[in-house]
Structures are given as C-alpha cells and as structure tokens.
Image 1 (cartoon, protein in one colour):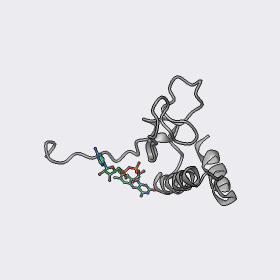
Image 2: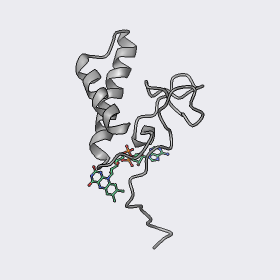
Image 3: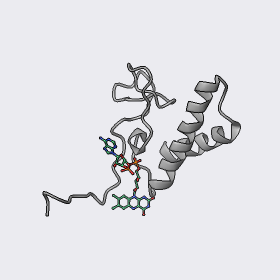
Length: 96
Ligand SMILES: Cc1cc2nc3c(=O)[nH]c(=O)nc-3n(C[C@H](O)[C@H](O)[C@H](O)COP(=O)(O)OP(=O)(O)OC[C@H]3O[C@@H](n4cnc5c(N)ncnc54)[C@H](O)[C@@H]3O)c2cc1C
C-alpha cells in the first residue's frame, strides 16, 4: 500500500515562502519570482509564508489569478488592475 499510494491529509504550504529579500528564509518576492533566478515564478500553495487558518484551495486559486494578472502585466508592460490589487490585499490579510 505505502509503495503505491501515500497522501497527506494536511495542507502543506510554505516550502517556497514569499517574503522580502532581506528574509533569509524567502524563496520568492511579492511578484512570485524566485530570488536569484531570472524568468521563474512559483505559483501554488508553497508561496504562503505560513499556513492559513482555513481551507487552502480558494487562496491558491486567488494566488493563481493574481499571478496570471502579474504575468500578463509584465508582458504588456503595464500595471495589474485595481481589482487584483484588492484581491492581493485580501490574500495578504489572510496570510499575515
Ligand atoms: C486530502 C486533502 C483534502 C483537501 N481538502 C480540501 C478542502 O476541502 N478544501 C480546500 O480548500 N482545500 C482542501 N485541500 C487543500 C487543497 O487541495 C490544496 O491546498 C491545493 O490543491 C494546493 O494547490 P497547489 O497548486 O499548491 O498543489 P496541487 O493541487 O497539489 O498541484 C500540484 C500539481 O503539480 C503537479 N506536479 C507535481 N510534481 C510535478 C512535476 N515534477 N512536474 C510537473 N507537474 C508536477 C501535480 O501533478 C499537481 O497537478 C485538501 C488537500 C488534501 C491533500
């Protein structure tokens, strides 16, 4: 059984923590770009600095929506919409 099927009922997060550059435990910046690597973002539950006090699926979807907006903004060379800024503020409230 263990050889063929293992799964955790926990919600693992934080293995690629989003944090300011000065934080030695940081993996990605607020744009979800990996420190020290060009052209690579991490977009999943791993960027959450800490485990939230709720189910993780909806915040993961919000992170993905925000990341999609940031990636499009990068390629269009414009700023993310205010709608997603509000979403980010919401995520920040959940995460911190
Ligand atoms: C048992 C269980 C129950 C849960 N129930 C709920 C719930 O009721 N409500 C809720 O909100 N949340 C729930 N969660 C949490 C939620 O499912 C996760 O928080 C969410 O799916 C995390 O999304 P993710 O994108 O970070 O990772 P995942 O959804 O795990 O996505 C990772 C993806 O990467 C792929 N992958 C892995 N390695 C590679 C590789 N080397 N190359 C290419 N692709 C790769 C995988 O196939 C997978 O598709 C539950 C989790 C578990 C384990």
